[in-house]
Length: 165
Image (cartoon, rainbow, N blue to C red; front, side, top):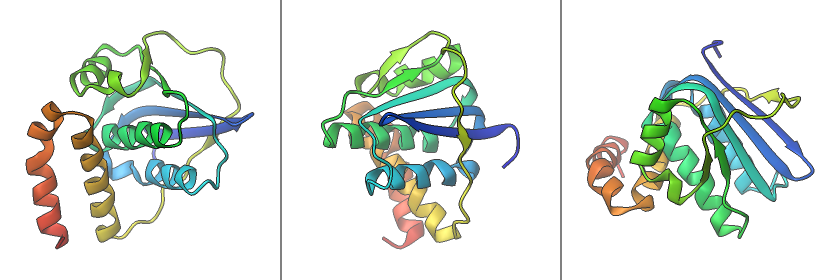
């Protein structure tokens, strides 16, 4: 993983902290997808989720979809709405534009001093696995609201066709 795209994670007293830094593009999303899978499988015991996007300066729709999946997981597990810290104006415009404020408590403030966090390692996904990850992420975006459905349905339809679903 290059230094421009990094994901860090810590779980302290069943509160999961995720820090996303740099340019967050689908080509570097496998670590986040794997982390989400580990949370969903209960490999990581989590009662609360905090996400720090303060050092992210670009985030693509795949990462936004993974965040939406994380919020849906919290809702399904009857956990509190995840807290998302973001002070970057362009990132915040995107978050609000895609209605993530419905799924997260968005806080436009810097985060407290650094926690000891471990880097999340990118996983070696096949082309098919990566395509399925992108499809799942965009389906999560569709599920947020009708506006996203209009914007991302063509992407989902194309991905399904390419993946042979």
